[in-house]
Image 1 (cartoon, rainbow, N blue to C red):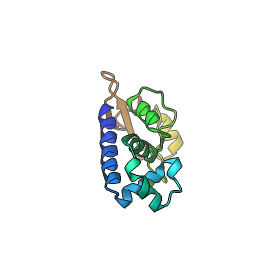
Image 2 (image 1 turned 90 degrees about the vertical axis):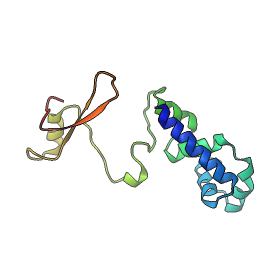
Image 3 (image 1 turned 45 degrees about the vertical axis):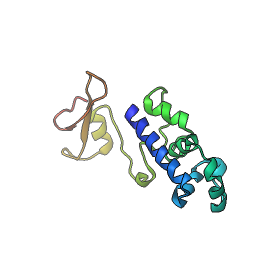
Image 4 (image 1 turned 180 degrees about the vertical axis):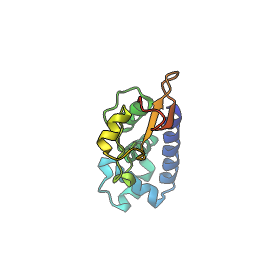
Length: 144
């Protein structure tokens, strides 16, 4: 997951550069930080020179639904057992869509209540490295 962390650091660096350039949209993103939530545009403009990279990392974390950068980093890298993934797995634009995950195909069909051939997908974790995810047709492998 270091690639994901590196990507977020790059995004923070880009945001930091835009804040220093006093880009209005970048400055508006600083409102993700609780102390700046109600700041007026002119206040954000005045603070632009004092914004550090750590503030931008906190903005990126907040935009993903995490309380701060440390929590985001620990969850994404797997250092911490995550109870809350913020909005990382369910961004606001997908709020009306819920995926239900089941360990066994039979459990999924019982909840779905649909006839045989209903569009269900089965996912399996490859046991060799514990990270590879493959998708199969649910009718091919009903053992779960």
